[in-house]
Length: 132
Image 1 (cartoon, rainbow, N blue to C red):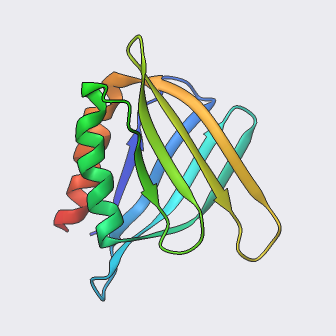
Image 2 (tube, rainbow, N blue to C red):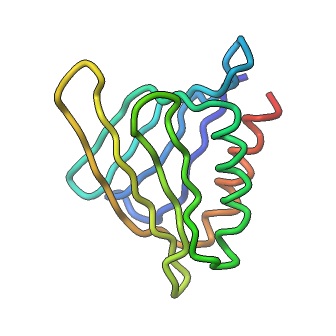
Image 3 (cartoon, rainbow, N blue to C red):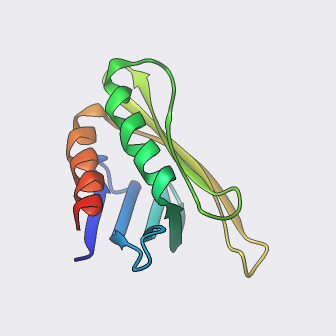
């Protein structure tokens, strides 16, 4: 069953949402409709990740609250697209990424902060996608 996974940002000007996230039928990975908003900039596009990339993202997200400095990075199956979440100190997460439209010469590099309290629910949602 598709799952929507959103990182709580406590502001309408920043968003990271994996809409309708679910495992791909062939078992090779996961698919979602990625929605990002950072200030006046936004993107909404399909995002595919391998099973290994998704699992690596989950494991890295588990370490973010410990503040080991390494970002949790979800890499797209093809190309250089990614979404990253890292501890930013003072109870904040740094959310960043780089997205490209493969059919056009459009790109978005983004960065915003979000409260670290939203990470647990986001991590739970990303794990839930693996269980569907």
